[in-house]
Image (cartoon, rainbow, N blue to C red; front, side):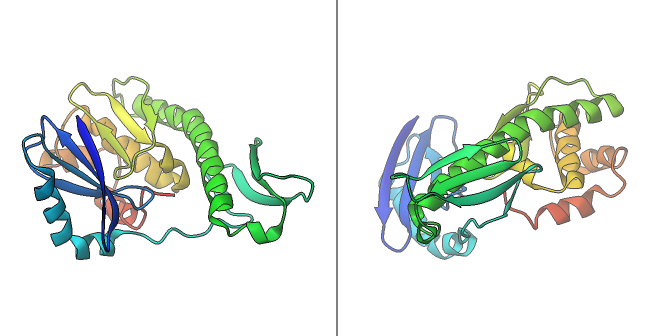
Length: 231
């Protein structure tokens, strides 16, 4: 896979990935608002750049403003974010406990700064990864056993565009950001991927199968669309 990064006026940095198996060009927006383009191996980068420029309005409409992390913000199911001022330090640091994400700064004025926010964001993601790695496989096992699915332990990864996935080998991947969602939506995503181990599409048979386990899966799908797999 070949990768190149270009800075385009009015859009910012765009990363282009040339993939052997790609048959068409696709654009996605990563968790940090970076634009990513997947394109066929044979396509010239100039064509990809032109495609991105034509899609500028769509890109700007779908990019999310990255909000500032603030005191007492909920992180996952068990953590709270705290900014602690210690005038004796020379460099901002972070620490994760069983219930807190602590970011230590030398002045309260530093809290909104990009550097401090980056430290807070990275520490919060580490805390969510810990929670997700502990809790999501347990819930996955419970639901698989409840509904008699054959299963293997899911992979927990940081995904930018999907809440979960299931491949033709029946390997399930869950987004660590699921840990930010209400439990009913976490259950929906897990059951959704479990059903994909039987039916690897979203046809009528898939949704009929979903209703065997969840009373109104399409209502949950609609509710899930109110959230974005970003932090």
